[in-house]
Image (cartoon, rainbow, N blue to C red; front, top):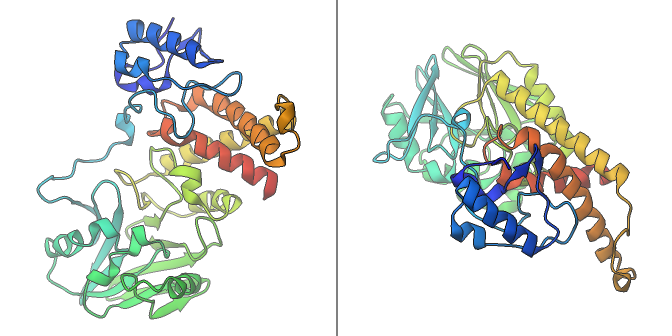
Amino acid sequence: MQCLVSNSQSRTGARKNGEFIRHRNGLALSIALAVASSICGITAEAAAQTYTPAYENMPAIPPIGVRTGKYMDVPDSAKGPAVDSAKGYRIQNLGKDLYMVTDNANQAMFLVYEDGVVMLDAPQTLASAIPKAIAEVTNKPITHLIYSHSHADHIGGAGSLGGRPIIIAHEETKKLLARDNDPQRPLPTTTFNDTYTLNVGSQRLELSYHGDGHEPGNIFIYAPEQKTLMVIDVIFPGWMMWRRFAVAHDIPGVFGQVEMIKTFDFETLVSGHVTRTGTRADVDLQSEFMNDLKSAAADALKTTRVGEGVDPRDLANPWAVYDNFIDRVVVQCVNAVTPKWSQKLAGFDVFIWDQCYSMEQSLRID
């Protein structure tokens, strides 16, 4: 018997001869975890935590809402530079007076020019850090604020920045913010539909809109001289995407935007979340994962029959019949992608079930 993960990765169970052990009931899982605890070093406490799978061939990674131990460790390839705990943030120089500020969970950028600072997003968690980060570089005021999109986790700190900056966003973002009526997310003062170029002093930013994906109004922000591209909530460098394609509004749109990102001449990608900036290789890796996920879900849909194995007492309940069908599709999808990807993407075990559910739903409906 071979360990899939170490003691610190006990959540994913074990595998035999390269194949994941599947458990038909809680007792089998208890036995497997007990064996794994002696061979792989899983703690007795983790081994004692069990769940009762509802289907055959259940993945070793437990489904949503079930825990059987610690999450898998974050691989070194996904880690970024450490944050100074005394400061609570770090600054990364992206070239020619362009900087990223991050707490290693959320990211924003700022661009210094001759007369001031252009702020790009203002995450809630960085609201107090942004003025300090800028002050490390310059004493110039924030004259412009660009919203990548409307979500509060990226611009919910805007209301605390002070001053009266020109706020630039897509027209759809202004519509959503007007609906939300959140004083911490002031309405844009300048909007655009397709493209917008901001020239300030000797600095230049090119804003463009490529349709609905993560949400309507989510824009690409490109600094051509610094060869830096900022696209939020689409790519997660080295990581599994946040749950359900980062709660994407339109999953086919996300696929299209990943391909669009590849067409830009960039060296650094600022993606809005997790612990480091991204590279072209990160985009290629996520693209490969997404296409594998799509293929796995499509294959599962083709080979799974609606109503098979449903308790006869539930056949008059269409919600139950399709819940059973969708679950079995997702079980097959998770099993298909886990051997290749579980060690390549940080947080794989946290959100893989979410991704398979979303992909299955999109393939059936979109």
